[in-house]
Length: 211
Image 1 (cartoon, rainbow, N blue to C red):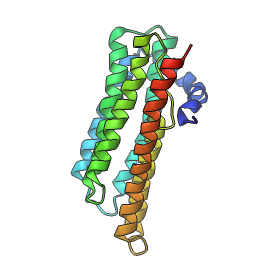
Image 2: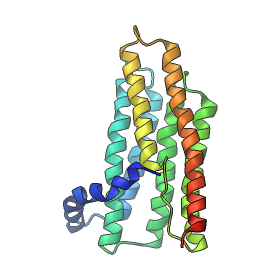
Image 3: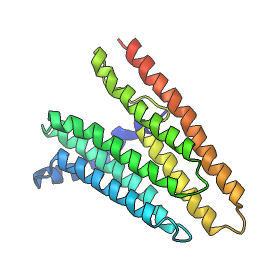
């Protein structure tokens, strides 16, 4: 099924000149991976501590960082594959740092009282499970699965939309009621949960039936 992940090759081509410069300056794939993790966790902690700043404009950091982080993720992979920096440690860091970063960035939305905690936790849990389903594929002799429709890039897009919606609603609080804010935010999380279930199914099914 369609996923933003399918745009990755074109995105990588845009970043290739920068990746070459970073390589010549001695930057490694593992350094990029760990730096993205540290920024993600620091941003999530900062937002949790300052969630009440009206009209929530600091939450615009979420879509901004989600976009930049996609660049980080592409860069560390290109450094590893194209400049012979693939290591066993790097493989672990690539998967674990992504899961930790995602959990922190998604989890900070718990700061808002109108977000249903159970729904948010369900999305986070299924996001982790979907990545686990992807990395399980090599254990049965298949390639790592990135099937959608709710892969990592798609989740980043949806949480960016959620942050933008919260900022917009806070700016237009005289027009957008608390009930509408609540319904749209949790409706989006509900859709994500359903699509994550489909994503998990697709990754397991395609791994089993790949030739």
